[in-house]
Image (cartoon, rainbow, N blue to C red):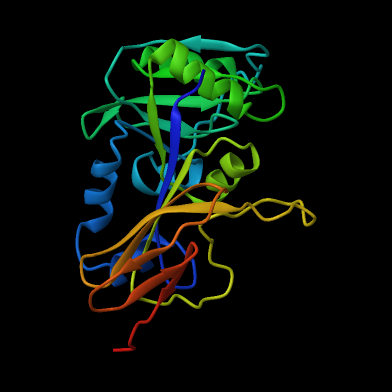
Length: 253
């Protein structure tokens, strides 16, 4: 078994997720209030997002680069929730083993240097090594549930790790908050990004709920594709829905 997995993101109207940009266009703490409402004590982020928010600036450089070369797990401590970092090659250095009251848990591939994993263990940090060339996400999620007791997990970016979970078929829900603003810059990461298969079909979703929060942010929750339903969201800013499509009308200010 694996956890129930929600991808929770804040984006601009054009689907971009640069943190500095979204901070400019959201009106308050609606992202974190919605995250609390989702009831996911454990959060997962990709390497780039972790580097931006938590990891040290300098990367880890192993003196002895021999890989661990096998699937393994180390439990440093038990907790009700974890801050999970996905770091394929083991390059992030950590100034602490806990952030915001959550113990850190690092997921790497089996190509990660054994020295790096020993360093994590010495710092009181739990880790999972799984996948020969790249991280085996399905297996890692099963280990999160079975070894660490994680029942609900929020994947909170960035776009490439979101895309990896989407491609692996691991998402049970998409929680998307669209803030009233436009990025428009070339090359900025989208909510789901990094999938190289140009022939991959679109993933169909079923709208579960929609509501306006804050000053014009629209919060939409989607599950796997299925029977379409009709919704109507009253109020200023207007967002209306017909058979699962959300129509948002926003003024430029």
